[in-house]
Image (cartoon, rainbow, N blue to C red):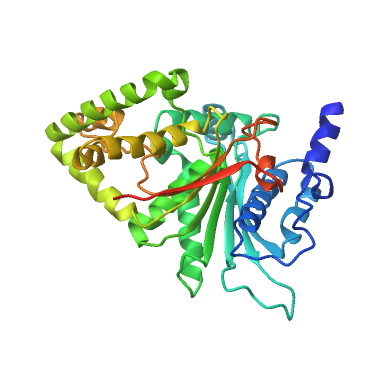
Length: 354
């Protein structure tokens, strides 16, 4: 009962929502406003999948959004699939995201930088009925098999249909947002839209998963480990020329897209992005630029797959990004709530592909 009461408070916008921007005019060019609001929309998708969904509307209506439709997808685990085939059971549907339309009050001036729609995706919910399908998706992300997940494919399809339904095809028309598992979905959708439609959708990715072994390596040895890895990838790339060429072409397509990555330096789930971009920059400066650039597009796992004729690319291999790093020493490093707090020890770094 105590846990339920605690969750009620966490899901109640009046109790846990941001106070500092609730009653002010939103400036859509303000990085703090954009971060807080998109994080709140993602929180709304979490609450939609709980028994406390009556608390959900405040998370988007407070910023003049309306719920256009929810994104539901059926559980594809072995138990549910077998039960449906044998016994004719109804498919178990779960809400994993939602599409919100920005609707400023009548007579209010529409800010030129405001989005028309925000598509938000929730992350893993450990204490809810979605735990099994959520964890299955988490495992596939670790194994770099998220392209096989129905939820990812469904998200790409729904965002594509949304883009087809609106008249203005620009980066300001549709934004993407997600937390943890949801950030992986948003990243996948954004990459897909950039490579297939050349659309640079604004993407706000909170605690996107990228587990790195570098967290277990001391600072003194980290540079040496990365240097050896870059050497190995470069020379393997000289052998696997077809895979190397395909990855270089992919990076060139993705180069203009700069998603916003919100990561915490204490969060082991997402700190791999910190290591990836920071060490990549070090290698670019200390090495022969051409060698470092070539090695940065490759991963040992993907090259291993290519030996068997399989084409994969690690989701963290993105050429450009705006990395927002939270350096605070308090609170849960992986929680979504940290991203709508007013006073944060945030640092910003733009990483651009050469």
